[in-house]
Image (cartoon, rainbow, N blue to C red; front, side, top):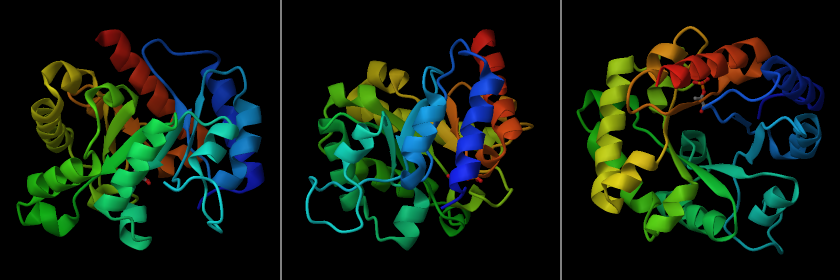
Length: 247
Ligand code: PEP
């Protein structure tokens, strides 16, 4: 629930201008609030920057006042939708079961999914990180076919690192990403696990992005606060570009 119409438009325009074409090995996307999607889409046209929604209903279009249908996101040019963000889980009642319904509905109806998981601080401190993630993964990706994984990105966002300025250390994040990849390997097989992108999210900034993204199991970043300033967002994209050319 950030930005205004004006700031969303100017952010998008500044990102397009700053990128000045595509960066090899990097896919860049923005997920503005739903009411600004159409205006942001106009600014992104022809740029290669992809568009996503921040949430969607699993219901088919119809009498569901206040909800946003998958078809509506597609209609305004979205290729992606973020599902299972910790704020949806924490404040809006998105259970693992609901998130799973949304994930399956989005994939079946043509939207790619950024599927978010992450543990609370008490879970990490209590040594429960892996069991929490395992529950979120197995419930959230229930009934997913191996073929559908082509259109899924997993975003690991430790709740204690979102918007707090506290980033997981690159080592902590890498260790957890390796665990997630191992789980994906057991569920879908190693080749698929290798091909699924696992993003890290949680206070990623221009000055810590490169170190995080250089880790072998960290394939991208899901950026909150730093995406509200074009120069910070662009610094993260450039860091990703540098890591991609090193690979
Ligand atoms: C987020 O909102 O998902 C997020 C990762 O935010 P921040 O980058 O500000 O921690």
